[in-house]
Length: 379
Image (cartoon, rainbow, N blue to C red; front, side, top):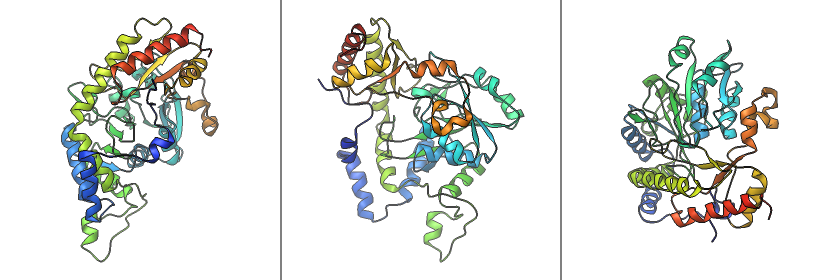
């Protein structure tokens, strides 16, 4: 049995196929002849805001774009320090450096691969202007114990919630807490996908307006206003980060069926939890699936590299999320000793996890993982 990969390979990404409602929604946009940011994008923004119970949402081209714009809107610039876990996709760090700021890497809790309020507090320096908690695997990060301190020092909170669309934090969904700016990714393997896209949940109307200006090359007028006028105003710096209508159309259909996706992901997580329970040497990274919508299924195993090769050779699309960023050449100047992250970097293994898997697939993966461990990862 070949298990579909967690990260689709290049050949499968090259020819995406849409069926049913998604195809109809995209066909409608294509028929309109308007493929950029249109009212379809704005409808998607309104629907996301309503789903989350927040005043506003700003659609952008990707999760990376969301982080970049959110940091710029928070006033982060050259020389500023931004605290961020090393255990994240490199996009989080690249968004920080794109602002001219520098990352201050911190360790994570080995049980969750998330930062804690204590990690953040211990890392604060006089140069800190923002903190970026990463909601790894869909799990929420509770910074309530330091929000007052951060606010008192003028430090902004920008959540990297790329994995966490739909997860719950207290009484509401992630994004509903207006003490933080929240950034979602709607990339190909996320809980909700647009094919590619992202969303910013701003804290204030002013932040929303700034984000909208930044995402469209600094142009102050809306798309409708530009269409009805002979000129427009470039108010300042900006980037071409808007979400095309085609992607928004896919996202709208996905959102309409999100309850099903949420249920499937929770059931698959429970299936993995049961199937892995009897395997010695396997530690399942906890995403709090009761409250959160799981985005990844990650385990810690001995001899990870050999186990990885063993499973790949048998058609199981395992991955590693993520190689620690503080050890990457691009970020070497900001290296700090992070013993927990460094140990985790050699242990973590991402198992296939997406809505097209079945419980039979899950049991098959667990059985092969048991064989890999028994063999010490040797072929």
